[in-house]
Image (cartoon, rainbow, N blue to C red; front, side, top):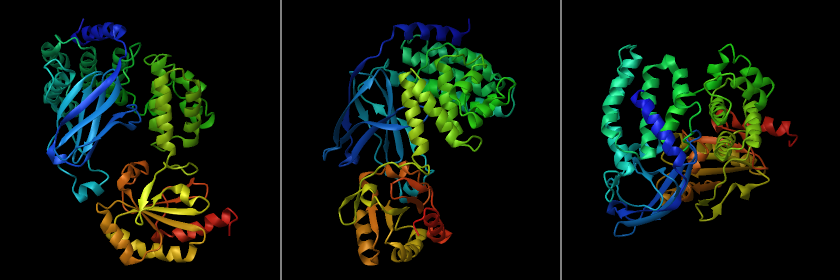
Length: 471
């Protein structure tokens, strides 16, 4: 029996006897450089949609002290966005963690406005844990693992046939096999699977059979889910190219049938006919929304059918998250709600404009393009304010500077400041500034994204209103 198979047997036996526990977790520490800032910790609701949900928050006082309480089920991976960093740790019920935060390094204005800027991931320091804590174990293991990972990836893509994966696994495992922690054991196993997948891509089916078929699904283990997401990436397209899977496109686009799609995919013996098959379908539906190979309405129909039929609580959550993620910006759906303060201090939401069309835009007064288009927005407002509201959400750092700008420019439409809900940028998937949306009187998206004023938005609006019989 190979080392990785022996480890798998160990994990399976431990999982059978490992029960869920719920308990309070306390995060505390002293970080003077964060004086006056709020620290918010998140977890992923699931590792397919990667929906972030806040699990705990707290202010850093004038002395730099903070204390945050949260509740978790079993071991959870949690993280926080602080300046240029995304810090993370693993927390267990009933534990207290004294965090050692990195020195506060806020994002520069360029970094903050760049939607492709990637925060530096950092396993945060913890002052009060022993050498057998899961954070210490995983951090040490990742260091050893990453020493070889980049070279293996390079060798694999260079076509090398002499990558000694088993020898490497044995070498690393010699250092960690004495630790029986089930979460850590699973974490190691699926990291080894990642090595095997990257170095032996032509044997993906064998990887699936070895690591997933008839094995427990570890929804909250990032190592398990990383390998799962890699292995089953765009699985519908892959299986549709096989003799057994030729019906996939017909099942989705023509029949819009979850039952028939499930029956077709069940022909692939390496994913079986149980919960793994359903999870693979969820992954496939998620991926399908982000390419142009399948009808989005067909995918939504199948997703809704899966949601109604599944008996697995985790899959209900994943289905809900996928639906929310893909419909929040689709024409015909209501976008994510928000309440932001206007420059006059009024808390404002889209409900306040119900009954009128809303030309929503995200801008910065430090953006030359935004400043150019404000004059065009002014013309639109003067001509069409009877039925069209213009709402600008400013993502500037200084709210007072925004107020001065609005007062001096005299622009008459609504300016909102994003400061009390910065996630509004993620909710609308804003990647460039300015970005526009047109929202109907019923608060449903009509154009997502919408054309800018200089891209003939006025003509498009006129044609839309005429097609709806409103002019």
